[in-house]
Amino acid sequence: MEIISKIADLQARIQKFKADGKKVGFVPTMGALHAGHASLVNRCVSENDYCVVSVFVNPTQFNDKNDLQHYPRTPEADCALLEKAGCSIMFMPTVDEMYPEEDTRIFDLGSVAEVMEGRYRPGHFNGVAQIVSKLFAAVMPHRAYFGEKDFQQIAVIREMTRQLQFPIEIVSCPIVREADGMALSSRNTRLSTSQRKNAVNISQTLFKSRTFAEQHTVTETIAYVTDTLNTIEDLQVEYFEIVDGNSLQAVASWDDATYIVGCITVYCGEVRLIDNITYKV
Ligand code: PAF
Image 1 (cartoon, rainbow, N blue to C red):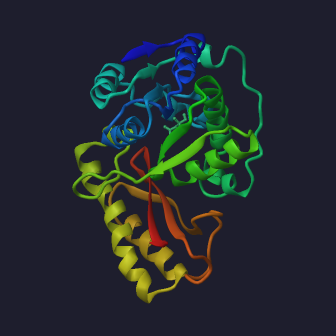
Image 2 (spheres, helix red, strand yellow):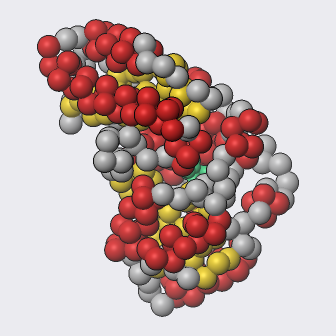
């Protein structure tokens, strides 16, 4: 595995791969890699001739300075995981390399970016679109891989890819969970032992809500999940919305869409955790 930090060097390597007629897959990450990232890398390696993984904590997508400051950074462990997974290039640029000047672009990503995370984290998706468009322009992969834990992010990136006409296939990959059901996240490392024990209720309540939903309305299911979690120590639900899985707009009834997903954000102490569950496909 090569470790590259300059865009020009990355482009030179990738041009060579493409000149040889090879397929290039790309996994953008912010590091602190875990088994969820490994599953994206494994899929990327299996579906392409070369797999490029970026590790870059993007400052423009953090609307909370404290969150940026505390975001876990584990470059040595990331390198070992990627080497083992068969990654061809680990791209680890500096902030100056990605942002030699301030990125003043404002994206209009439409209604998929306005709800949920868009409402609670103003500017977040604009920052995601800034960095992912820069990374796409640098790597120009055939395929790019994203995890479904960030369900809304995938819809936003698909929209950005469509608007900017990148000829890149966006591949979404299932959430990877711990044995007890907790969705893997780099932020989980910030939880204390007791917070981690309480946080498992997020996924467990979502799973139980599937059965609950069979006999109850959308509104009752939202109340069930929110009220259950808010009674548990350390947990405070920021939002739980049940939405059309394509448009991401809230549904009022189970008949309103053929694909329905529940998306949740919960604070566990100071750590902001997200998860989602599919009710109907
Ligand atoms: O999902 C993430 O880790 C980030 O939002 C991404 C896509 C790497 C952009 O910084």
